[in-house]
Length: 308
Image (cartoon, rainbow, N blue to C red; front, side):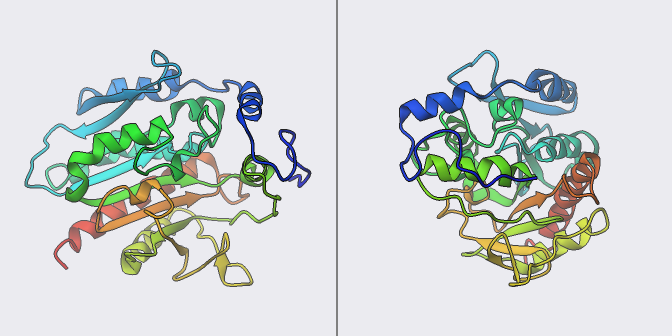
């Protein structure tokens, strides 16, 4: 059930100032544990990965260290694959899909690629089940110079030395019913705009890059995920979330222009995944499996076509 009533913070038609942002922040509560759910798995992976601490969130550095997993057998001659999850902390399967891949499936490509996995880019968002950070800033619109989001800035600094060596970047996301009931109304209120109700796609889909499209790559990932879960259909206008469907389950955004995580490198192959855990045809576990299938298929395709 979604509500299209005005958001309870702010004045209709007026963008938020500092008082509204503080009011919004005061409403956020911790609902799960980054330490228990994520850091314990990362600690377990220290036996097989090089674990890099690449920053800490400035508002609570003790609680929110930022970690990435790096191939222990890193060799400069190999192509680099970047896997990111939890850019929006509330998108659970992105975080656990990245961790599941690292723990159970990465060994299959050992010696073929250098892997860099950042499984939980926004740990405060993970704990509060929130799309934004503490400043009501969307990290996935903040992969830009002088980023306003420390989550995004820290990841960009980590990846910067590898930017032109990344062959593949896959960024793991999901869309939930709260996008329509909470996050989109909050966005409209924050920016002083009217809320325009939309729909949530029922199924998995991918976001390609408008400027550097790779349709065959995206379709190969879709084909693999279709063996695990259903693919989101186009609506009656031939669109998914307002964007034209260019192949089954594939739309395009200008990734770098919008400051999206998937546009932060010069990777030849890049994509953003989206799954829908609230579908009656899905489960949280199925969504994690879909994310893993997407990562493994993307790596397989990129390796098979790196010279093509």
